[in-house]
Structure formats: structure tokens, C-alpha cells
Length: 162
Image 1 (tube, helix red, strand yellow):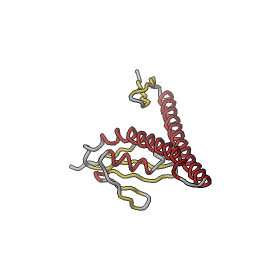
Image 2 (cartoon, one colour):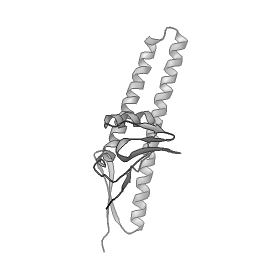
Image 3 (tube, helix red, strand yellow):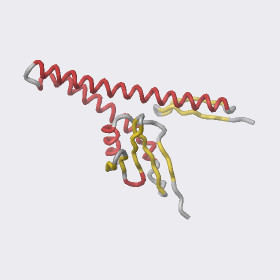
Image 4 (cartoon, rainbow, N blue to C red):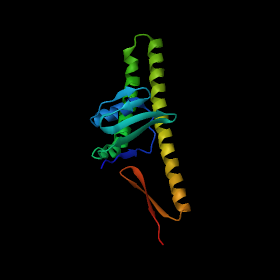
């Protein structure tokens, strides 16, 4: 009897460079096929209108733990990229001989860093909005909901008493 496991991370990821870095840290390689990035072992990353979505489809469930590790690894990759851009911004002063080149490079790097920080804020806002929507829906269905933070993640515990 065959079975198929399907799971996905309920979050959109916005920066493909950070996604690829996080996947590399977790020990996978990425192959691009159109708007889809294929990983071994049943993982795929699809580009949507709001960002990138990670889906796992396979008869083998042993790799599902990677879905739990990915958001934290991705967030670490985003922070590292932001820190790298800040360092590049600081080093732009020494790298370029002319004042105009230095200022242009500094502005470009600052814009790139600020755009990435804005994407990170937008991701957090979307996550909070989804969590609030789940909370409201659970309350409407008669659940008592407790919200707590565990390991930096918001966890909703829903209990229904009869």
C-alpha cells in the first residue's frame, strides 16, 4: 500500500538568495525549472504572487523535520545577508576611489539592505495576520485559544470542552 505525505510551511518567503542559502545549510541542492525550484527528496519551492512557498510531497516522511528547521534557518540567512550588506556599506567608503562612485555604491547597498529589512517586516506582518485570523476562526468555532511564544514562534493551543 503506497501513501503520499503532503506538507507545506504556512508562510511565504520573499528572498530567493536567502532561501537557497538556508537550503544549502540544511544540506540540499536546488535545481531551477521554470518558476519552480526542485530539491531532492520530494521538496519543491514555487514562486507565487506573494513570494515563495515550500512544499513537501513524498511517500517518505523521514525528511519532514526539515520543514520545522527551515524557517529558523531562513531567518538566520536573512540576518546574515543584512549584516553582510551593512558591512559592504561601511566598506564602500574605502573601496571606491572617486567620491561619486563611493556615494553611488553606498546608496545602492543601503537601498538593497533597506529593501531586505522591509521584506522581513512584511513577512512578520503576514505571519501575525494569519495567526490572528486563525485565532478568530477558532474562537468562532467555540474553542478556547491560548497563544504563547515557544522558541521564537507563536503557538496557538485550541481547546474545545463539551
